[in-house]
Image (cartoon, rainbow, N blue to C red; front, top):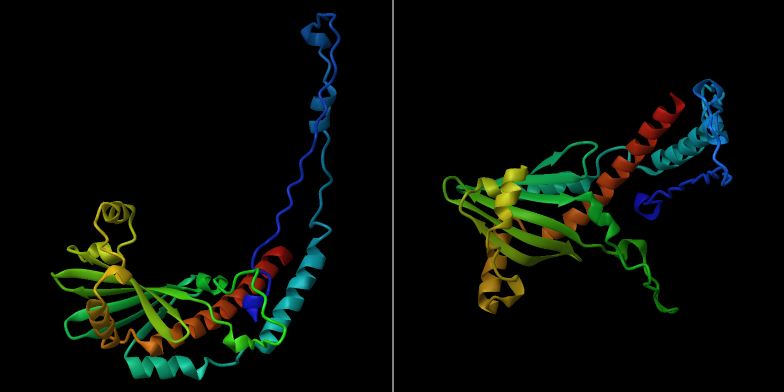
Amino acid sequence: MASQLLRHSLRTIARANVARPMMNSRVLTIRPQQAILSPLSRSFSVALPRMSAGEADADLVHKLDEELSYEKENEEPTQPAFIKEFLDANSFKLEDKPGHDEVTLTRTFGNETISVLFSISDINNGPADGFLPDEDEVIEEDEVSFPVRASVTIEKNGKGAVTIDTVAQDGEMTVESVMYYKDGKLASDASAESDWQRRGLYIGPQFGELDEGLQSLFEKYLEERGVNAGLATFLPDYVEYKEQKEYTQWLQSVKDFVSA
């Protein structure tokens, strides 16, 4: 799976140490017509050989092609059934732009417009690197869970909006905070101006600090709008599916660029 492959590139920075020419304490007077290029200056005048491609290009393209072939052999030929099943059962519409890591689910509920924004970057939020299971403990790949953060915005025309930060993991939606915006535009607008205005607003208490009865009613409020166990199961599955597609396309794009 792509989530188990290389996630971070290794960058090697070569630094050239340039030796400065030693100078005698004796001062020399050099006339313009007698100026002599220093060794440092001469080094920059040496022309590099013209090459149509680097020596590593062919090897890199070959390795990228190997990875691409492997991923294509193991990818599903059609869209997984769980996607259509979830969308049909929960009245959500999916907005997923190729090449972007954010995905949005939208639906209506009475006079409300509901959007759920999440990112495939959360696939990196798996178990800590130092996690080691006991010798007698066997962990199946499907049992390894990772949290997916989802920002749920519920907007009413002319009445503002509420944004609820949640985390989906192990089939449960956990609420972290509830924010109210008098101007509904501030809840979803990504402009620098809106971001600046949001920073000065009171964001509300931590959800866990609220009265338990109030917490339960908020959770029921979300469940009625489709923010429930079904969504909590769907989000990690879709993140893995989309990340695999994006990784395969990344391999193809980089291969095409290097070989051009």
